[in-house]
Length: 334
Image 1 (cartoon, rainbow, N blue to C red):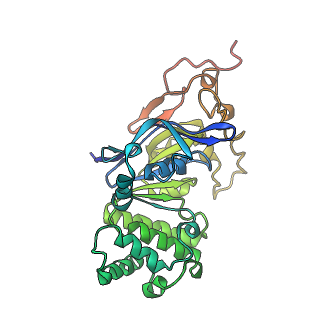
Image 2 (tube, rainbow, N blue to C red):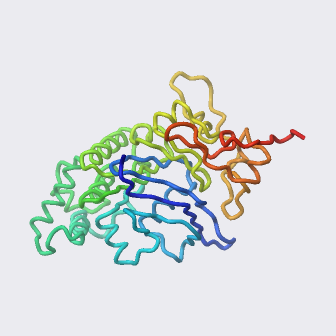
Image 3 (cartoon, rainbow, N blue to C red):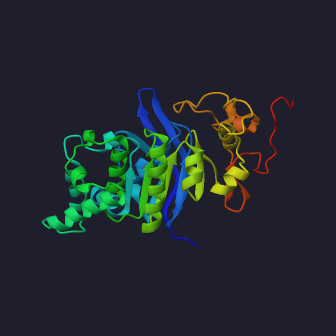
């Protein structure tokens, strides 16, 4: 039994907007075990990145409102941490790889300056031990298959290719020991050959260093390749969670089934019709299940009550009345 290092309980996150509060995350739960690789999958705008940035404590209170919930990292609630505790969490507990390396790297400092600062303020070395810090920085670049670390250290971000910048971001996330690595769609802007290299590198480094991983992605193919367990997220809700292999053999939630039906198949079989409708308006979200306006199985109860998480099988749950043992009344039954 793996020890749980991250436990998100009943978390809600609202953004302040001119129209009112946008309820982008609504009463979700998520757990990550020691050394476990987790996938957080869903279409753009469903709340994946917002959730993980809140775990890191990088969304300011002027941007968001958290009406309820807990984010426990090794038993301590991140939402109650003061600034010194949050800085310690980011230095030793968690790190995040951005989906945009050009915005994650400071354009006015060299790669070497940025890596040295991360190492220097981690507390692992004496701040005046320049040789040890330099060796650690070069070693981190070599670990991500950058064969000329001295040149990379002297370069500015704009002097590197997209794939090299992404490798630098991974190196900066792994250069100091961390328990949990959060990768936020790290290969979105890269071509497929570089994507495959980055994914293989990420999986190898996480497994070798026995870190936990949360991979944020909208690609089921990436999740299938990288993670042990998947959470499917739609409209700020977790709608299904299971082992990776179970998701592809027995998808249960109608949204998950819709996502899989959108994946092109090499054998052909016609074009996908996609998923009907549009993502919900977070300021005025639908009552009950947020997927109900787009769901082919939706009944009256789906539009008035939020479905509970129902047990489908071992380590497999779905938030749907189809499996909740409830008497669901279909529309038009009267």
